[in-house]
Amino acid sequence: MPTRYAVALFAHARPDLLAQTLAPLRQAGVPRIRAYVDGSRGPTDDAGHRAVLALLRDIDWAQVELTERPANLGLHASIRAGLDDFFAHEEAGIVLEDDNRLADGAYDWLCAALDQYADDPRVGIINAWAHRRFIPDDVTGPWWSPRWSGWGWAGWRRSWALMHESVDALLRRLASEGIDAEAYGSDVIATARLGFWDSHLGLALYGARMLTLYPPRSLADHIGFGDAATNQHHAGPWRAVPAAPVDERWPFPADVVEHSQSRSLWRAAAMADAPPAPPAAGRLRRRLAIAWHRLVRARRQWPSAVVLRLALWLWRRRRVAAFDDSAPGATTPVRYLWNGFLRRHRDAFFGRGLEIGDCRMLTSMGGSQLTRCEVVDRVAGPGVDYVTDLQAAWALPEGAFDVFLHQFTLHLVADERAALWHALRAVRAEGTLFVTFPCAGAAPPQGETFGATHSHVWRHYTTAGVRALLAELGIDGVHLVLEPLGGVDAQAAYLLGVPVEALDRHRVDMVSEDAPLLLAARITKPLRWSPRWSPSRV
Image (cartoon, rainbow, N blue to C red):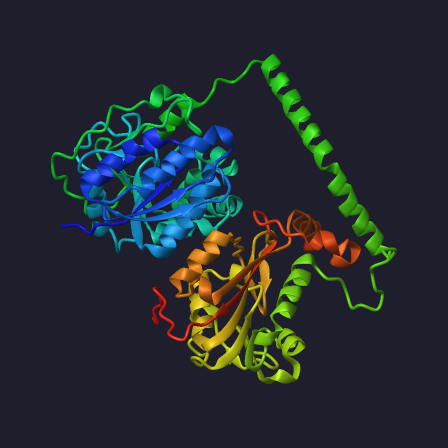
């Protein structure tokens, strides 16, 4: 009997489709569902949105954990945030949208495949949906392809963890490693650059050289075509033969090797979908339309851009009244906001403290209340007490520090979860860990300085993703203060390099809940800390 895995289910305002998706899950005896419902987009959605929530709350045949978004995030942002949360809680599971209907036996087949390849790093995704346009004509059982298609699939935490790398960084790395990102269709790159989460994951799977396992015929229906669809308003050549039940036992292939026809079939399907090249007049009209769109967008955005650039010009000439010539240097918006957060939490700075790189901020906030200040860094240097990598910081004494200031580093390490676990391990019970989670910014092409070393990782965070990450590490809402700092103005100033001294502080302090510059966290280590995940000592 295969393991009964949880299902991540994404819905919005289509109760009729959701009911069809839920029916085979009930028949299959799915034990747990983590449902994520995006917020209503307005009056036209409200009735359907309420009906979807009622449908999920009425489920009595499975354990349901419902996450309802207070605002509409949109399809791609909603699924990204939901899968961040799902795989923070689940090592593996099955992912469905409200228009993916599994055939009889498909859930058991997906669960068995997850068990079969749980420890094989070459396997990234198990797909239930398939189409005759890319199924090789000689297969009689499951087969492999580097390209995945979604619409009913199963995967592991290791697969979703690949999404930490941006699309641009992925494309640069694929090019440097000689991997042709267009080998299975150029549409993947185009849609990934538009923000499609599934295409982004597809590129990440290419980069990790992971394969997707497909059934010899489709085990899922995509029923979301039509006026209510988000992307696919008509099926066209992708209308599939209805999914058939699993009425036989297919042996899982022992060799994880791409099928020889996979590339040619995918390329042919992608080329057939490409629109024909427009005539010269059509190309001219298109270019004029694009130019007009850019002009309109620039007209809407010019006031803020002019203000920010004028502020930067004035600051460089020290003609801004708020600027103090005696102040050392300039303060970036992210540092200004973080310092304000720490000042509001100065009560936590006492006893034995630990900081990364140096002790300047600890001593500034704690002063005489600190009995001892210590420093951790990856490289030995003056004043460094512990030379260790934050991702494997076994050299730090366990439960020794009253306060640990873990600032502006987590987004630069490859294994954020391990770095946080070691930080919590070093703090005493009911001690305090301060952490920064950047929500905006960009690393330079050559990488970013990380203390005394260099990092080629740059990660952005969302509130839901941070809460899910910390929940996996044994930190619930009672032990967490998570505060969004800054907003659109602070982001623009930060990205343009405008210092706080050149700006109206009120505009920098304005908070955008849905688009902050930084998430600041104050974590109190529970008296009985019991994380659901811990790193291996190997």
